[in-house]
Length: 418
Image (tube, rainbow, N blue to C red; front, side, top):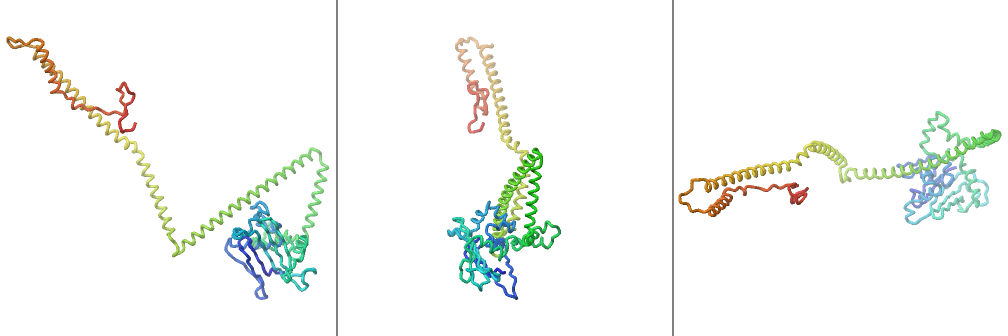
């Protein structure tokens, strides 16, 4: 049996009809398909497995099972499998066709007697969620089977049994496991596949049924309280199984998020690589990184300097206030000197007038009356005050808060903050 040709139509990365010729000859009988990550190698394998087994792909490989779990269920997984470009063009159907040749076919009325090939086609419509399997004669294109069960049986009997499919279709990374089998568990997937091919799984099923029957007999023969404990344990196991399934679904969702983020990172890395090639780059990435490092160093230096200056900042803020206080003290000292000088002058004038008018000697035959003396006494006082007063030297002090003003609690300085 050979897979001679595969045609993938709007399935995942494969836009429109992509035809892959797999024919070989006696000299060149091995086909190797390679490609970068994310370019469709795994989806090529998935397309083949899906074409043959449909919704049972989760039984073939754990990776396929995880992919389905990421989308919650098989239907959602299929909806997400249509090519994005095709979906934008309002196409709602994708398909995979495989030409299988060199197989021994049964005698079927709808199959050409000389034919050794069949075409297996599986189609999915994302609008009505309808999936269709077709097995046709490559010469006449006639459908060979009408019944769905007959199609599934034909694939299992004449192509690849689903029990053996995991032995045929598997992730290439498992080759390393096959080459290094050291304990039974490492080769369990091979043992399981071979066991199913040889029919040993029937005996395993029989053993499980017998054990189940024996356990039921033991349970029925146990005491009532023990039976209740067994029932409780079974319920607890079932709840744990449900919890495990939920955790597996959550884990699948997280894996999907990781895959999406990985794809985004890969896109950015590709963009960086494309724009960092010689001649295409509009900037020097290394120089920018070096400049960023210099700026970080400068930031640390300025931060340290600021921390040092922050200790003297309060003093710097007070410098203006200290100068203002010094000016106030100087003005206050001048005012005090002016007031003291005025007081001394006033006392001297008073003493002078007193000596002039009220102390002998007086002029002979003086006719100055007391009224005249009083007039000149007051005039002398006024003249003395005008001539010797230091009122012009006095300067009013400005205060932010004037506590001497009895009419107002606070007297704010004009154009200065509180």
